[in-house]
Length: 93
Image (cartoon, helix red, strand yellow):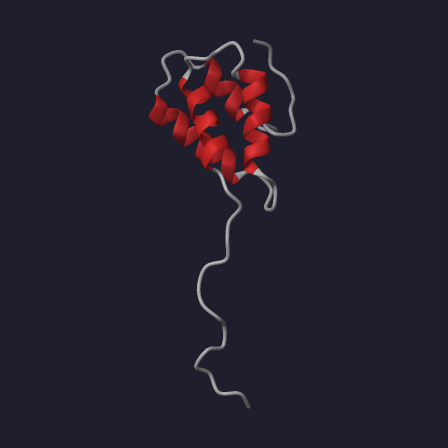
């Protein structure tokens, strides 16, 4: 596997995780979290995960990061607004 520059992995975190011999699923989750925190706000995490899976996971079906990326594609959703209405219970001046 050769290192490729990809907009979805600009720091090479996912690429490097595939190169670490004996990396565990827990370690891959940690790397994945660090990578996901670097995704620009508003970007679709599923699209980035799919792109990286196509590049790095094609030759590593049993690698723990491949499983993490597949899981991210299935469970990732855009954040939804939480909480109630603003200003409820406040008096207007």
